[in-house]
Amino acid sequence: MITSHPGLTYCTSSNLPIPHGMFCRHGGVGSGPFNSLNLSYSVGDSEEAVKANRNILRQRLRIEHLCSAHQIHSDVVAVIRSKNNLKEIEGADALITSMKGIGLLIQQADCQAVLLYDPQQQAIGAIHCGWKGSVINIIATTVAQMQKEFAVAPHDLRAVISPSLGPCCAEFQNYRQELPTWMHAYQVRRNYFDFWAITRQQLRQAGIKNTNIETTEVCTKCNDRFFSYRRSTAKGKKYTGRNGSVISLPQTDHD
Image (tube, rainbow, N blue to C red; front, side, top):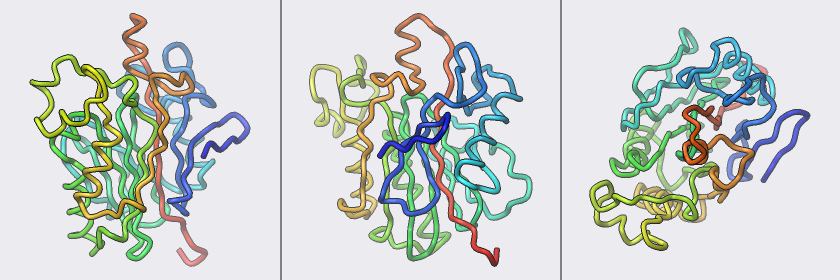
């Protein structure tokens, strides 16, 4: 579902009855290729603009703290256990926590953010899942870590796949070298792949019920409301911003 707020547009899901949002590129303070809600410190935008944009997200979702990582297309899962020193974590691509009031932020510009929520154990996860993350199955690693840390039962988890590169635009000319053989079955036409379907399959294999999986089915390259690395490079532009997907456990009056 698309939610509109003065200056901001973002996707939400009824699958996640907690603070969350998968944000479009508009409503921030950035300019040029980062116009305007760029949420990454790592793409050349000013630190002041990114900090201001992150504050916009916090205020909109009423989140006390925002936690993110310097993403490197790994299968490293960071467990957030404290509200102290919530600086950008180096070298992780998934974040999990059971702490309230902390928003887990994934930065993306065609890659998927996969948001996870367990209403029984009150635990959440946020995964940065590009094609490399799919190949190494960061989803399975994250779900296993949530089981270990928070006693999550995978069948209780709810999952949402964010706006990201759709099967209409996910071209891989070197797929025989880049993608494992089992993924070749998800080729929808010559050199084009359905990574939304691949992610749904990996979520099911991790134990999540099919009825608990939702895909927003918005392609970031097609939809210019979102930053898209592939769209920018196709136009000869070297830089672009990063969209943000956020999930948080709400604070109570007693927290």
